[in-house]
Length: 593
Ligand code: ADP
Ligand code: MG
Image (cartoon, rainbow, N blue to C red; front, side, top):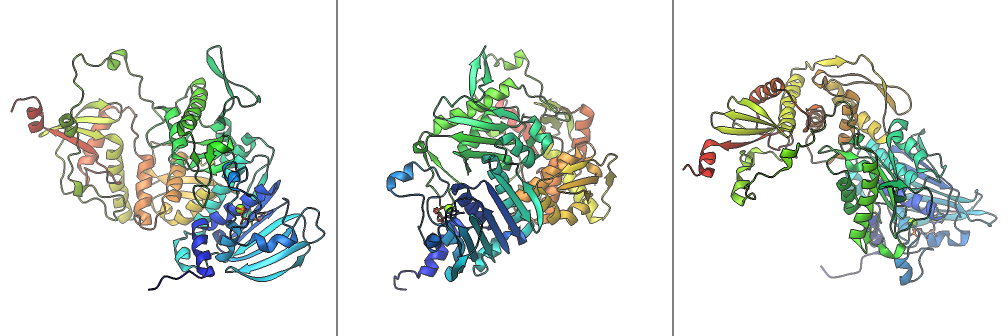
């Protein structure tokens, strides 16, 4: 092959691939343009999960008729002039790539009328080629319609998830922007149904109510300007920020949490971004107040001087680089921790917090040596590597290694069961063990088509997010087959009528929400079959948690049931349920042999 320059068309499609990954990317770019244009109201309409149609209407400044064609040229922008501007960006867009990228992979129509112009203009572009341009009467603002996204890019089309899932991502996106820009009114119409509308009052709290529901919003804690007063942190009202980094927004108390980090939303200078450092700073701030595997609900805006942050890291502009990462980390962690310690965590019903350590437990043993490498090796899981099935395995883990009868001795850290067997000591992770027991029981019940169902006595309504509704629609049959009975109850609300009988001990509504979040999140094509995943996440959410005190009787029952499973040494995710210290090891470590 000779080296040659790619055709404009091909180059445009390649560039488009970096910016436009899925329907939600189109919505993101279009609403960012509307925000940059000073819109007060942004209306989004989608069909077929956005693949068939996305329409974004705004009442912003509009584009002068003479410039609509230029707007679709590659690297055409009104937001950047010189290299210096790149380090002081105050707009969401600046790369001049969105409109040409969208137009390269869809059929795009833009109608716009600029402030002060008599008439508007319309331009139609199909697969990157302009097919029509003419005058068009229109209200001031811009209306962009994107149809048949990726119709001519089969590789991309194949990667799209179900329309419900794609619509869920769009809804998540609009929720995030509604929180970042509470002064703007956003709405989303999905297949002719209005599924979201933010009030545009200018208060983030009002947007929170719309996004997470009043019950959650009322429990959220405001993070704001803080000042130290009488030895404790106080909110400083609306005085101007004092430091370079100003953190504001809302966080949930530790007892209001989710099984996914996707409700941890961060904005840097009102730009919605993904950032591990900030996420880590928040999780750190909660310290041990959160249970393992749980994440808080967070919406935080971090305002940074524009020259302290580089937003030109990735074509999608969803990542940033800070000049001083540790300053950002500290600012976020302090702000969150200050309000958390001011609002002592209230353990929620059904969640048993581990008891505070007694003084003697804090004392190190007089001459306990630091753990050596060989001592650490002791705690290796006793399973062989090939017994621990990877998460993506379709089959349940194959483990012919059964466990002997065990005698339960007690519980450590309210999380591990300590037991004795003929061959030594066993430490059992109560959550993992229970997951294994439930997994096999539910799988067996389903195979026999006799899933025990438990009707709820008080089927109270449960409000779902659009994404959760999407997951529910996609997995409804599978959820029913394991024992859930759900009825629609109006706008985004359902009635939970029955649950798998196995679920009796836990909060069924919270469990269903956790399952939907997980189903909606991890939808990777190569993961387990939908069924296996469903059962796994059902088990995860109803199994006894770490940190829960169990009676000797409960532990005996759990261990007895674990002994009878087909693969007692791993949980359904493939992690070990137990580690073993055999007598030979003990003898060696104590120098008896
Ligand atoms: P960028 O946003 O990076 O400048 P885009 O390709 O998204 O690049 O848009 C190109 C230009 O078109 C923008 O710089 C802006 O001048 C104009 N434009 C796009 N959308 C709108 C809109 N909704 N309202 C007003 N002007 C717009
Ligand atoms: Mg743009």
